[in-house]
Amino acid sequence: MIGQTAEIVKLTGYLEADKLPITLTGGHVMQLRIVALYVAVAVLFCAVPAMSHHSNSAYEVEKVITITGVVKEWKWTNPHTWLYVTVDDEKAGKVEWAVEGRAPGVLGRVGWDRSVLKPGEKVTIHMSPAKDGSHVGIIARVTKEDGTILGNGGNNPGNQ
Amino acid sequence: MHRIVISVTCAVALAVLSAIAPVQLNAQSTPDFSGVYYPVQQGRGGAGGAAAAAPPTGQRGTPPPPPTRSAPTGDLSNGRAPNAPTLTPEYMAKWEIIRKSRMSGSYEYDPIANCLPPGMPQMMSMPYGMEIMQTKDKITFFSEWQDALRRVYLDARQPSKKVLNDPTYAGYSTGHWEGDTLVVDTVALHPNSFIDNSSPHSEEMTVKERIRFTAPGVLEDRITVNDPKALTKPWETVHTYRKAQQPNDELREFACAEGLGRSPK
Image (tube, rainbow over all chains, first blue to last red; front, side, top):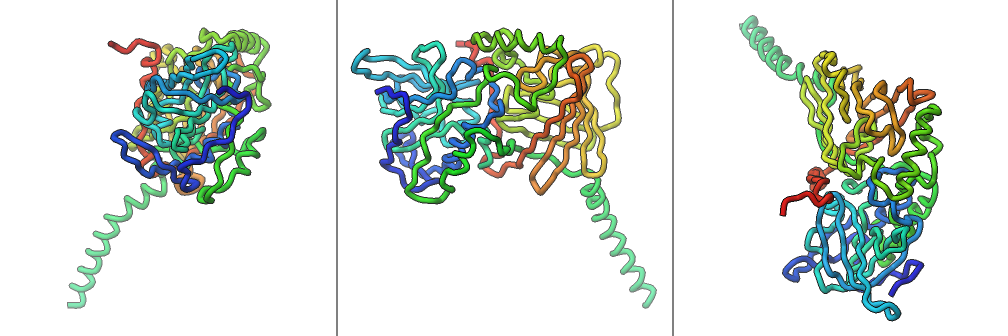
């Protein structure tokens, strides 16, 4: 499902404003403190090019669309991470999306790790789409099926 | 007996003084900047108000609002910011070329996208965090962003002719203490980098910094950039950083080239 406006975030499993469950390897559920939960949203609005990497040059960053799909691959690589998902669009059939995330260092400080997303799991992605209309975007937020929200760390990844 | 008591008292007092005094003097004249820091979010305009209206941490049951943007614009489509460096016509023309290239999605004029160091003074934005290593004679700044490094020599040495003829991204920095403030001068800067995120400069650019704690754990870097060829007037900017606590006091490797597909199979 692809919408032009951000959809209401699923709240299942949402326990506390600053403590969210994150499913890690082996099925263990750990309480991880995602301190940047709100701030991740806040810093998205920062007009300063503090995140002045190349990645966002080709994205419509003023626009956020939402896709829900199944994880095909999660690449924990520098300088940026990549999330590949398969979206089952009723009109177009199965569509592959490649969505860029921030650096492992940044995301690692706000609750992500190299196995936080696994092939086969369902995710909802808030992202800004590529300007050229291709099935590429840049992550604003990823919501797991259990309601866990993974923010993008914003500009202050370490100290909030 | 009386003289012995006085002697012993004096000896103890001297011993205590000699142990404490150097530490106190050292602490007063040269603060220790060592540690990991992250930039402090400045209050900016735009949609930031929505962020401020977000429920405070700890309030239960209220979800964060859906994001409305993914990132700040980086393709220069918004033109020059009001506080951007004021470029001379020659360098403004260069910037227009950079802008057109960026807006087309090209990385030709984007050293960062090519995994080159951000260089001075841009690197001091330290968006992914900074680690400072300080000794009496040298202070080293490490940026997680691009794994960039710069060294500031504090032992009163001056840049040699060889150094001046060999510009680098970080440049050559010498510093001295003025009270609690570290004053740093940087020269020999490679023109293949930007003043901010996109403004070009010449090899004549110099950077002056005044770095100090404005509060415990809050470090400020006041930067003044001079470039007689590229700037119509000196450009000033201020960065503020906050010292990190565990577990965020560890920076991660960046290894930018991994994303260029050049890592061995």
